[in-house]
Image (cartoon, rainbow, N blue to C red; front, side, top):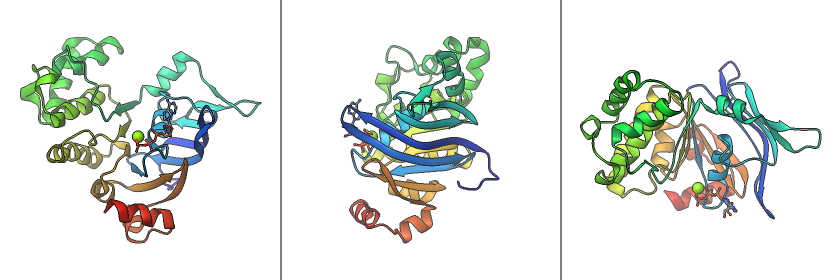
Length: 258
Ligand SMILES: Nc1ncnc2c1ncn2[C@@H]1O[C@H](COP(=O)(O)OP(=O)(O)OP(=O)(O)O)[C@@H](O)[C@H]1O
Ligand SMILES: [Mg+2]
C-alpha cells in the first residue's frame, strides 16, 4: 500500500474528529492504492466506524485532508480547520465510493431487483433497460439471481447482505467501504458474505473493510491496520502483522481475538 508507483485511490492525512468533548480520531494517516484490500481491526469504540464514515462524508472531519482518486474532498483552511468542497463537487468525488453497512439497509418495500435499479436509475438517470442486464449479472455473481423478485424480508441475513453488496456494485464504485458486514449475521451465514468479498478482492476491487473476522483479514487483505483509542497503533502486511505483532496493545488484542 505504501508502494508509490501504485495508483493512490484514497489518502487520509492527519485526520482529527471529535464528538463534543470526545476526541475519536486523533491524527490518522494512511493511503490505499488501487486493488488494495485494507482491513481495519481494533477494539470497540476505537473509532473504526467513524473513520470509515468520514471517508464518504457520513461524518465530517474537524481537521486534516481527505483525497479520493487524487481529488480533495476536504482540506484545512487558513484557520487549520477542515473545509469541504461544495455539495455538487462532493457528490461527484464520492460517486466512486460504495458502502456496505452492518445492518444491510435494503429498501424493504422494493424487490431485490428494484433495490439494485434504484440508485443507477434515480441518481445516475440511466434507463431501466440499460441497467437491468448489469443488475442481473451482479445478482448472478453474488448467487442470488433466482431471488431477483423477492422482497428483502423474505431473505436470510446473508442473502440480504449479498444483495446490499450487489446494490453498491451497481453504481460501479472504484472503492468499496465495508463496516463490519458480517457482524449482524448468524455464524453460519458469515461464510457466504465473506466468500463474495474474497471474490471481489480477487477481482482487484479496492476495498476498506472494518472487520472482526481475523481469518478474512489474514487471508484476503493486502494490508492490516490496528486502531485503538483513535490512533493507528500498528499496521503492516497480514503475514507479518499476525505472525509478529510489534506493539503490546496489538499482541493483547490479537490474543483476545484468536
Ligand atoms: N454520532 C456520534 N455522536 C457522539 N459520539 C459518537 C458518535 N458516533 C460515535 N461516537 C463515539 O465515538 C467513539 C468511536 O465510535 P466508533 O463507532 O467509531 O467505534 P468503533 O471502533 O466502530 O466501535 P465498534 O467496534 O463497537 O463498532 C465511541 O466512543 C462512540 O460512542
Ligand atoms: Mg463500528
